Length: 417
Image (cartoon, rainbow, N blue to C red):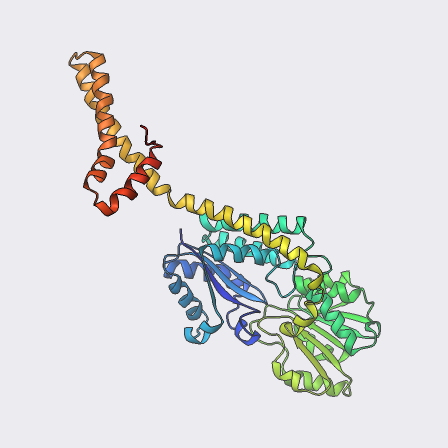
């Protein structure tokens, strides 16, 4: 079993790099099958969020898996390499535990990443790419994350992306209660943002989504209006605040559309937060006057507030993780010696059967049972001791001391014996 993890995240790669290696949910299972079918990879799981894309796999050729990531997204491997981290064995285990526990997130202690890990496991299970190693790794990952959150205060007073968006909006507008808010998308992130803004009692809320049914479900919860994405051009000028997070592979709001909306608003300011990766709003929109556009990386400074107060919890969490990594590596190493133990037992079983068949033939000829048993025991003893005795007798002077120490330990021998 050769565990290996690699990827990019908000610490190693800028947004314009991360959005090039995003895996869309509806294509995740096929991507996993493609990796396992066309590379020397026996197990694989992929976590793809706005802050990270990571591949966990069981492979004897790590670089082949890395090359696959570049090939799949039609990128040149050298252009991606400066942003990639490669984590073999123990490093991969520790990284998984830290990420799921919220220690490696842009928002320290944020809980959403654990759900994203579970989604990754479900996708791998459906694709048939989750084997013994990754199943054990992720089950242990979930247990460690639960232990960290229950025994430390890592998530206490953490600033989420949703609450950071509200805080940033209040720097632009004196009061959200006088503003109209438009949410584009209806997933978990938009739902969290909608709840935070709804608590500020905005003048009006609209939810736009590809399917009207999902938009209506969220709009009903925040006393808002539901529209489809096709209606965005007409409704955009009517809103002061825009929060977007969809799974669209291409921007859905271009510079021209926003420019027309600003003119219709007579240049009243618009506050926009694009939480999607790849981005929903063309970056050029930020060049327009009267538009305040923020992407996920722009919120980093705000969401880091309060980290100092939780440094004690971080130290506790790291201690829990370190112990858990040691336990997992012990399990992994024990699995790696299973083939040798099986081969040793098979070897001994052949000796046993050979001597037993010989004894049965002697008994069938009427030989004395006591003598047959003596012969059986001597035969087994000689066969079991032949190989270690031969190894000692044929060892060189340089090897002999080390081999003697090993055999004494293996058979629990003592000098006086």
